[in-house]
Image (cartoon, rainbow, N blue to C red; front, side, top):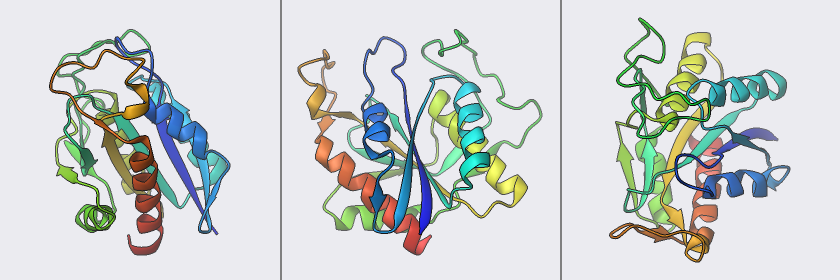
Length: 207
């Protein structure tokens, strides 16, 4: 039995919803082919998100951490491979912080990478019929901060935890609840769920 923490985020900026919040709640307490899943909803705060996750790492000693974040501007799913030591948000975070090109950790390493084989995960993702991009720049908002701090803790402490990060567009179950800007796309909620499951299984078996 492996244990996974699956994180999503609370709504942020002008949004009243966040599909990754729903996903984390939906999978909390479930079992996927021998993977015990702990769903965790994080605040959209540069430091608060990782602080909450860090406590769960200490409590549950997971084998896997898969984080999911909403990006309304991407055309398809996107795997993030690198978190950079930068904060530069379009919106204030949940703590009303809006840094501009500030370091997450003053004098810290410029970047940390996830320790899963992102290219292999992308191939497994695509084998299920989904389109996915690989990104080496998670930009500067909360998702990047969480990715940087999580990967940094795993690397610096030599933890035996596999981690990955998935960005998703809006899911189609929100079309009647949001005003989707022109040229922005949605994915099927069932595709997001299947993609999450594919990644978790791939992380457990091949990372």
